[in-house]
Image 1 (tube, rainbow, N blue to C red):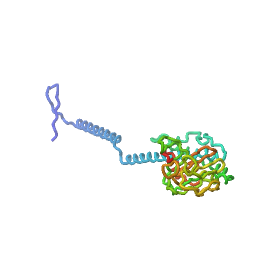
Image 2: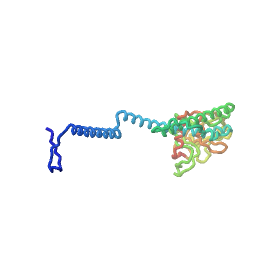
Image 3: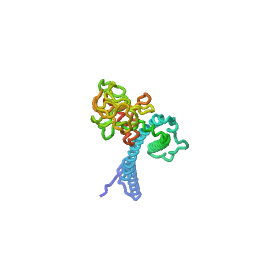
Image 4: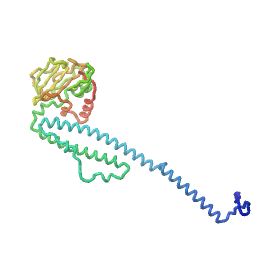
Length: 323
């Protein structure tokens, strides 16, 4: 049973019963509908702001996945850029120096695209900056790779008439990859194993079992095969001509003698622990016109891109040398 409602009539100073006329009922219905509509609208706005629909959830997941993929792509491009930078360094300071050619100007290697904004069509989106920066980085890297490939084509052309010269350049590792325990230490400042102080290490240390074969890295003539050099123990020196000399130190035994002609890949000795050494390994150096160079720049004769990238990473570690 509906409740009876009253109102106070100030004229009669008494309460009078509210008569529910059709107009009154219509008024109450309109008020009720307005309140329901307002509550519905407020609920919709709150739900739209704070509660994702299944479609919105799917789109958000796809967006987050896209960001992750772009992040991975950028990391990979950074890795490629590092390898490319090393190739550019070798191209300018090793290959072009060998063939007495001028290095490529940085303006050529780093040239931009110029003209109108190439990435304008990528603007106006939620992640426009990420997409645009990634696209620019990829385009720039692609152009650098193209420039480097053309530079290598020039080097190949210059090398065609210098077969004897190229055979003499120390261009392979002195110890085969299959025989290595690890690349113990690279060229640069390293911790001396005896004094425990930082000291310039002018070669590369290859850790391997005693008796592991050591190979000539280029054609040449054996200058020395003796133990009369301070710290090196039993060692071999090969004169490759054109100003290049290589040193193979801490050997266990020799397979060549002074004055002997050798070819790249010939067995010249065996890994040992003689001289100033902390364990069986080969210490290998490359000299050019009396200057000691980083041997890692000369392993272009046998290593794949992945192998070269790996050995660059290992050689750059600031660890303790073996000698």
